[in-house]
Image (cartoon, rainbow, N blue to C red; front, side, top):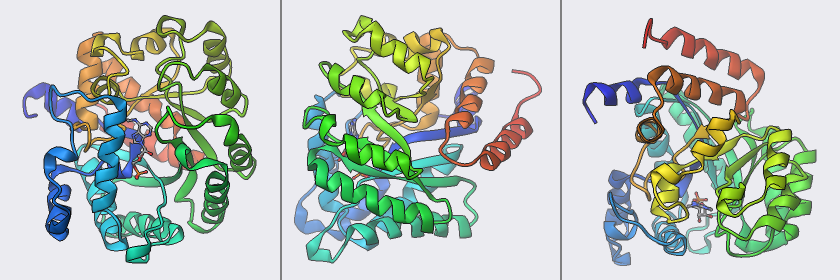
Length: 347
Ligand code: 6MZ
């Protein structure tokens, strides 16, 4: 990326709202992890999906399992989180919401609480080092782990909501969408909402999740991850679209992830077009920049070239994302000031 257009996208100040920590680990960091754990015999081809390659969503979830083997101690999490934060900052991201599923790893003594504390420590250390990015953390619920773990995760997140100085702001519901049903997680999610945690839920990432989506939209979530199969053209329904539109719930859209994970045929068929044309709030995100070998600048460029957005429209798109962050209004004001300071005289 170094021609004039690429510089524009790199320098564009950006907001990243949908980034899974362990899916965001770069090639360089994976190399360091492999060197730390040679006995695992993991090769780089097992942790990322290169240019032009595609996998089924199921295969993508196998990739996360490999990365989890490499990232299983406090030391690993601290390094991975700091590297990921610095990489987003180097890509022009000014505000980042990272999400990650707290894991217990008995062999290394890692607990879920220490997991969250370590991510917070990484955020604080980056701040102390003067990295130019504001980072918040969403505690993730992996849907495959069922209702009890979901409830325990919410209780843990509630504690950090009160004690983390605003760094833990919400809950993410993610994990293999073909496993489990949202009805089992409803009470945990409702509890989270009532305790002031913001909610970002992966909804309709695969077909045939209408009932679940319809149910979870009633909470309602504060943002939706993917929402690929919400609208009628993708086999969803007008009823679901109406609910999302009436409640004006922003969508986090991850183009390369959906194309490489084969839930969307090609970039030009991405549902970005449907929602953007409608004027509904959408935010361009990376999902898993390491696994899908992308970055946020490339995602903006891809959306712009595929759907014919001019530079002013691209700027507006990145600026509007500020309205949908899970941080207080004072942070939104600071970011808006930053955008207006950086805005070019003309596009
Ligand atoms: C649903 C996803 C995902 O939590 O260990 N994750 N969940 N859909 C996706 N689309 C491709 N990409 C990532 O990061 C990895 C975890 O994030 C979720 C999965 O639960 C995965 O195990 P953390 O940091």
